[in-house]
Length: 341
Ligand SMILES: NC(=O)c1ccc[n+]([C@@H]2O[C@H](COP(=O)([O-])OP(=O)(O)OC[C@H]3O[C@@H](n4cnc5c(N)ncnc54)[C@H](OP(=O)(O)O)[C@@H]3O)[C@@H](O)[C@H]2O)c1
Image 1 (cartoon, helix red, strand yellow):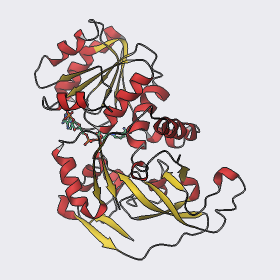
Image 2 (image 1 turned 60 degrees about the horizontal axis):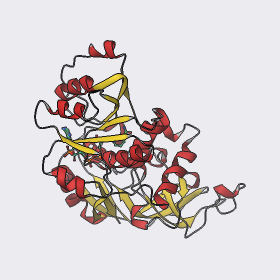
Image 3 (image 1 turned 120 degrees about the vertical axis):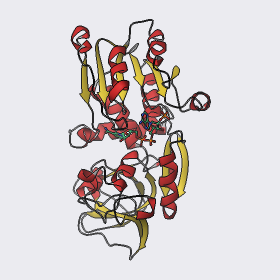
Image 4 (image 1 turned 180 degrees about the vertical axis):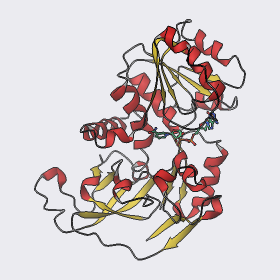
């Protein structure tokens, strides 16, 4: 087996590949040969030392998601009391949201083989390709969990989706259209508008570029001046957040789910007149909520029947992890970057 390890906080040169013996499963555990590891912005932050709460200190193995094929099972796994708990060699699975955390700090998924408790795996439908198995939760559960599970968007909801080219935002465009809403994306880069319009997975009704100070007026026109009922935002800081607050409709909700922006002073007083709210969203809330299995099933079933489609920007060998991080850092991609061990 091999894995990618962050040796010290810093640049891509801190990511090194280490080879070692393939691990054996303990009682109640399985070994999953990972065929897919979805990359996330959080891993860049972890490598730079900006996300210590999740990564811990170096050396650590990054990675929040993964999926693959069960290669070995430990004692008690194939004959577990309930049929849905049983796992056997050859089954295709997705690791649950809390699988990396269950292994302890810094035991992420950038590994060719992953040892984990059998109940931290979800069986995957045959219709989903091996290469996608480890890249579905962060885009689709972040979007669906916030917009549907928490916000319960209804047909006709007007939804603003910043950072339109990210995998989470593209997934959000699909969720909003599936539930009958209006999806307006924003991007910081004018050259991405045509590329997004040509991308079948990006189902935005409109894309607005945010490089002029008055971009928000253009966005508001798209709602016939009413503003947005929901803003689903990973930037949410400084001048951009001020403009978003102006864009909220009466009783609207702005969900903050990322840390891409640079913090600065914000005027929240318009929230009073609009009776609007700003709330935070972390998809980990789904993990131990009691409804996590139905959330997993929703995403897997909708991917399997083609309702949702993961936009894959590029795949890399896990051994080329340095190149993959450099590509993500450049930010020219549309959609998901995937590591394949
Ligand atoms: N809360 C949660 O549970 C949760 C779960 C998953 C992900 N996230 C967060 O979601 C965000 C997107 O994740 P990802 O992995 O999909 O990232 P990604 O693929 O790296 O996409 C990032 C995109 O964000 C935009 N962007 C980057 N820096 C920006 C800035 N300073 N101001 C405005 N826009 C900026 C760019 O899009 P344009 O070029 O189109 O502007 C960029 O392509 C990250 O912040 C991540 O931490 C949160």
